[in-house]
Length: 256
Image 1: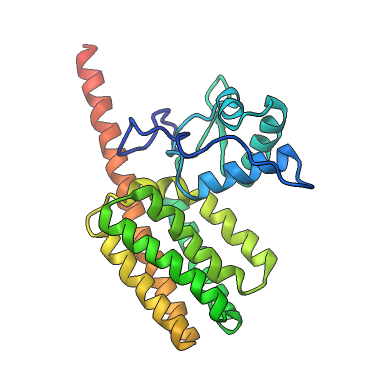
Image 2 (image 1 turned 30 degrees about the horizontal axis):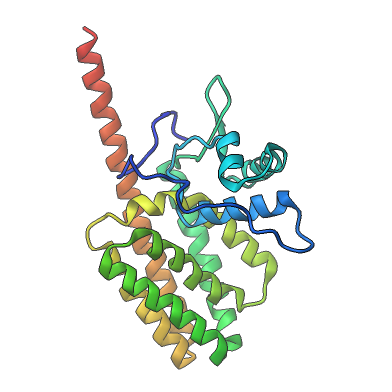
């Protein structure tokens, strides 16, 4: 992981916690499991920035729960790779992936998600198509209005609805683990030129493949989406590394 302690972001003023609120209690669910599910979804959907510190007390305050279930949930997320401890003070933060890690994740996603799409297509009926269509329409609306938060929320919803239809729980768990790692960076990468247009073109192809029950076409659309997104993710990381180097040089000159 990168050794910088500066969050990677294109909008440093964005309040990462603004979209979260008090936990909604569910019968039979523990507070720890609800906190874990809430924060896991937030990471996958890009609520938090790469490099951003995650405060135990802040999380407890926003979710209106005690620190004990939050502490346990954060430990689980660290074990999942969604968080990491950093520095001498052992601060918990969102990881900043390296270029090599991004390539590794891309290649694994191409295989797992392409396979999941092929397995899913035979199980997607009219009811599932209505929900997938809804996710697509909300993505399209968000892309046109530039609403990054709504776009990312429904981007994950669109993909996960397809993959869950494969009815392969272990496969789905692996896919979620990869999204957990790249979700924070995707929020920054959507600012890349033409990202929305490229992404929506790939999603349109995927939706048409679902309507045609064409597994090969669906797999190719998913592969295209992942590949193009990975290019934007890598460029975002390179830009940030260049900015970090530039700031470091300025700091070195000013100290002389």
